Length: 496
Image (cartoon, rainbow, N blue to C red; front, side):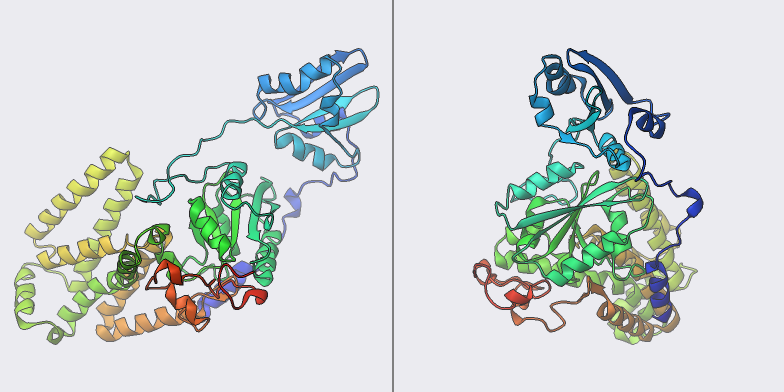
């Protein structure tokens, strides 16, 4: 635990800035055609179009990869040729002393107008790059409920949320992350419900980020977590607008990034990573059954094969006599100790899973099914593993996919190896030590400063109505204590 804390603190420290590669300061450099051309040199898709009008020449500057020519002609060039002043009125006048702002506008799809006779620059938003349409999600699919999912367009994602929450209290603040990419990040929250301390924490984390650029919000999430060295995800992530809406109404904070489909929700708890949105569309009895299956399945998958090792190596008395005889008969030809046998088949399963995910869909599915059957049967006939172990590993692999969060599924696979090694060295005592370490680690984790095991750690008794057991919808009228603001410490959802 001490090593993990030291590494975590080390990662949270700011990396020293590389002065040799830092950009020169352009704040005091005046805006001109020459300065823009100088800063955008060797950028082949930046266009400088000169237009002659009765009132003098006008230079139009834009990125051809961000602006559609037809849209540009209809909204900018044609009105200028007609001497229509509406295009100027719809534009924003540019400060001639702020060259970085002008460059930022050009690189984000704005068109710059320079009126030579007046020596004035204007900018107008003409961004019209292609984006993916709203489609059904494949990673968080549901039989009932809305079927739309977020896209890689930040504006589209914001519209999906604001279409569901028609409330002026819904705020979104935009920040730029990535010292080289200048990627837009939007923080969404309901100002009358959010915990202001949580809001300050997430904003401070975003403002302190120092990194060249993030390819996806899941990468940025690892930089702003409270404990980056932990295998457990400390923020929930989703591609579903309805789930994001549900958490916003509970007082949480949603963080979106341009060019990323996922949205992170903070703070979150350990239990919420086992709660898909479909639980709220199902009847409460069905949802409780499935939620309990996911939660307890997580612990079964990390102790099932280690218990097999412990029983055969150190503690055969924990098994019924008939089952023990069957296990010994199935292992008569296996030359390896149980721990080596389990590690071998677990690694084979990981290889099949990884290879199947890297191949085309149809080939990957065939490889997973046929490869598992062929390799499993051949390994048993060759005397490398026992029949019983094939069954246990298959059950354990299926249970690892039960959590609604894919990152939690990966976490269970990683932790299982720690339990396997502990069982191989110390048997059930090793498993109990590993389980105690797991609970101690979870107790030490926080999500945006909030205990990770909420509502297991005392918060509000009403939180237990929506935990491992899901109460009827009529009883789910209290916001959870994990993110409740000080002004809303008591009271139902519809309380004013």
